[in-house]
Image (cartoon, rainbow, N blue to C red; front, side, top):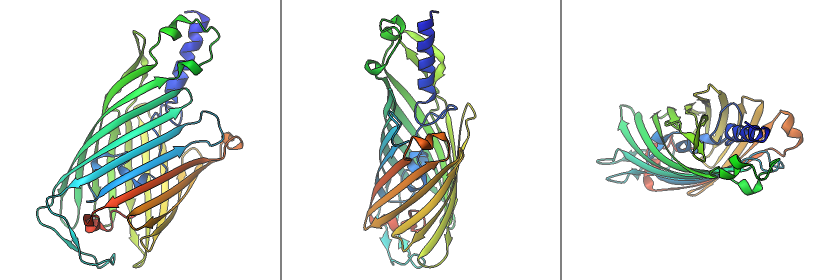
Length: 330
């Protein structure tokens, strides 16, 4: 193989190893406010909380660094109910609701666009979930998603030693990849826990007519858990954790503590392995929720970046949102 083709191979390897946000084979976007829309990382969450929700998340990583990762995600989810739920009270501790023949099916959809330098990843995910009610307000949920996404390379912006490189010029710069995700999720009036797997198929990416088994997407595994402490009628604390790894054993852990005030305000801190501190906060206005998080890294990149910024907007509809008051809190 010629020197120029070796250089191109190194470029492709580097691109695929940093498809989204980090090295060590983590290929999918990270969300600092994961607890605000757990549906993005676990399909079993779709409809589990009993309301119709629309979420928009945008994340700019390493602001100030040219071609740094940029992620957009738009999701919608709902519970397919036979009858709506009627709220009896607005107080957290005294609220109650009644229903007849509640549905057990949840559905959702998720559109994403993830950009990193010369590469991009845009796709659509559709989800079906089934929820099994258990004793004492417990619920066990299962979810399955089908995903199709496009992997693309901006060849026109690439700089090579030889612009006439045959391998590069014959390479496909757009690839359509089908995939699937699955998850399980448990929730009750105090805690939640879930496990999910993304990119089940581990597809290999093909450049031109030649397949590269080393250039493939890897399965991602997510273990999520949280517990809620009701301090008073108007204050609640929620510690949570998110453990992420891949089939290549690339491990990342988020440890988070959040406080909620009067159902309308929240603030929290997270520590992410890799020496990253996350500061977050938000407010609710009627059916609308606004959240913001900033990631501060202690690595050398901090001298070139203004931090990573994430904004979340959500809208929740339906009286059935009050069916599980303790589950839908931010």
